[in-house]
Image (cartoon, rainbow, N blue to C red; front, side):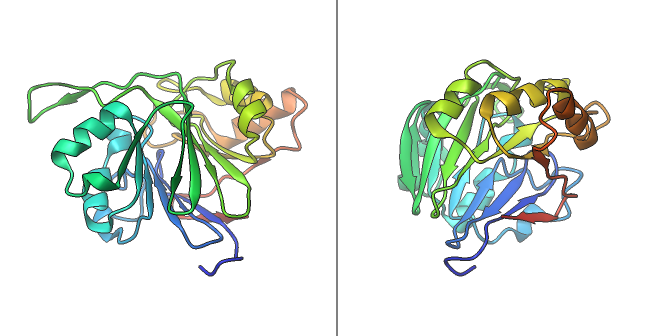
Length: 243
């Protein structure tokens, strides 16, 4: 995409999101392209300029390592994940170790790591032991035009989302709504209120029956909070929204 064009955000099911900025930078969030809703297999992903992984659960870390090995992105990562990547990743110099509250430049974008309220450990079948890649996190990405996208990762609503609003003023939030493992529509509506965003892209829903929250339920919960003017995008997996 040429500089000065639109930014497109494509949801590939679960929490897997691709963002192509107006300046042509390709960002991948939680790239589990092998999820059962994704129309795009991980092997076909041939470009990533910035890799952002919110936490170490397999349904989020997903296909990050093989994709990054092919595409060599800048990879801002929480400290423990950065340490682990130094031992297993072919391009550790492209990893930018950081932590919550930090802001780094990555391929022309400003990436800030925020808090998230979730867990982070997983089981490593190969090692036969737990694997911990750092605490869960979210990201604020400031685009070339100055607009800001908040990717919450897996989280419940938490009061410090108001601090994210005050400090970073995101324009659009990518929020989980499925429930059970993350916040559902009711909690996500409160998150929207705390964040003060005008647009929302719901994720982490519909992958499995247990992730039962829906975009329509989110709209209803927003209306109950007198936030019916907030735009809820509801792309199908593989569909993009354009801003």
